[in-house]
Image (cartoon, rainbow, N blue to C red; front, top):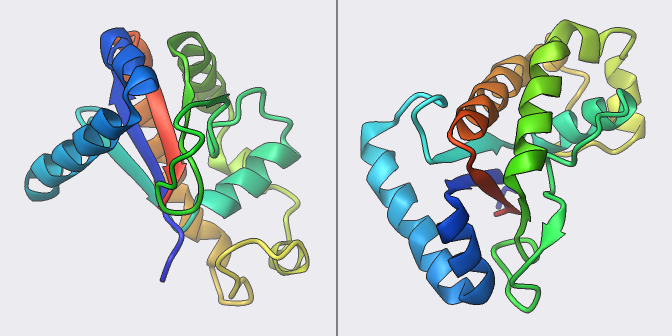
Length: 166
């Protein structure tokens, strides 16, 4: 079983409902995932986005860069009694989404991996391991760009983002 970073864009009204009715939120997540599974929208148009198994690589790189927003785990708790895969979900309010989108656009993937040796990732036990493969650091580039585009689209609509590991 894999650990996958998951995101869902929500309006202010949907966020309020999710906070007050976590069961509704989970049902809504499943509905959006099912709807977008077939159409596979680009990150700029998607309501749901996944960083796949790169979530921990991105966490490591962003923490190393002292990134100001926790885009990997979310910042605000809700549904604390629920387990959405690997613990309860969290969210980023719209103002934090705006900051994250701006800061992600300002830092390139090349800047994030600059000076990183794959052995650093192995030593830090960054999931999913296997960092000794040739080109392993390149694996996260696509997901970093997708997350950037997804959060920029959310920021442009003043959306908040639900975040969880599944």
